[in-house]
Image 1 (spheres, rainbow, N blue to C red):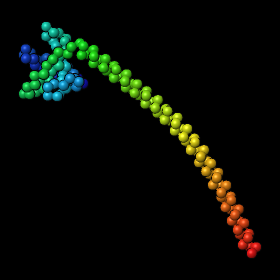
Image 2: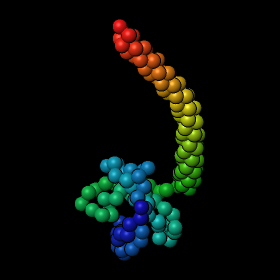
Image 3: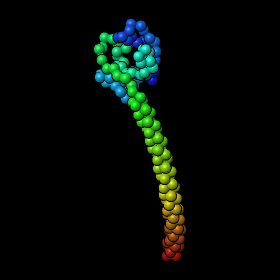
Image 4: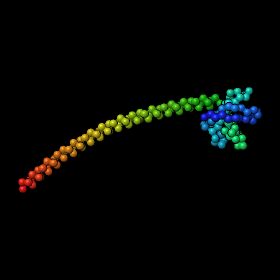
Length: 145
C-alpha cells in the first residue's frame, strides 16, 4: 500500500516528495507497520530503508526506529510470498479435490438412499393391497352372516 508523503530528513533540510510503502511484516518499536522509503542521498542512492510511520507523519512522537532494508530481506520476502502463493494454490486444489470426493460420495449415498426409498414405497404399496383384500374379505364375511 503506497502513500504519498513529504519527508524531512534529519541530515538535510530539503523536503522530498516521494512514495513510501507500508511494511506490515516489520513493525516499528511502537508496533506500527514501518514505512519503506528509497534513499536519494549521494552515499546511498536508491537504497531502501524502514522508518516508523510516525517519524514522518507526526514529528511530535519520537520513535527512533530506522533500518536499512537489505537485499536478503527483499529476496526472502519474495520467496516467502511465492511459497505462500504456492501454498494457497495447493490448499485450493486440495479443497477442490475434497469437494469432488464429497460430491462423489454424496451421489453414491443419494443413489443408495433413493433405491432404499423405492423399496419402501413398493413394500407400502404391496401392504396396501393386502389391507384392501383383507378389508374386502371382512366385508364379505359380514354380509354372509
